[in-house]
Image 1 (cartoon, one colour):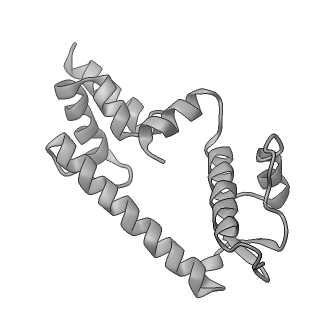
Image 2 (cartoon, rainbow, N blue to C red):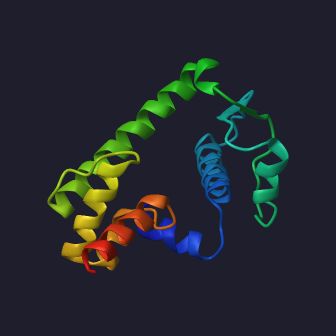
Length: 155
C-alpha cells in the first residue's frame, strides 16, 4: 500500500494493526482464489496482533479467512515460506524507497532518527507538506519532528 492510500485510511481512524489485518486478509483471499479448489493444510502468518484482536479488526468484513489459519510470532523461523515472504516484502520496500528517493532528489534514509527527520524537513521546506505527505506515513513521529525542525528554522 502506498503512503497516500495508507494516510487516507489512517486518517479515517484505522489503526496500523487494523490496516495490516485487512491487507493480510485481502492477500489470503486472493491467494486462496488462485488455488481454486485446492485447500492448504495450514496458512502460517507472522503474528502482529493477538488472534482475538486480529479477528476483531476484521469483524466488518464480508469474507474472513479463518480456516486453518495459524498466527505465530517469529514465523519466519518456523517455515521457509514465511522467511521468503519477508525477503520479498523487504525487496519491495527497498525498491519503493529508491523510487521515492529519485522523486525527492535525495537519498531517503530508512527507519527513524535525526537524519531521517532532517531529510524530511528539507523536503518539507523545498516541496511542501503535500509532497512530504506522499512520501511518509503522516502520523509517524518523523513527520512531526520534521515540522518542528521547519518551524524552528522559520522563527
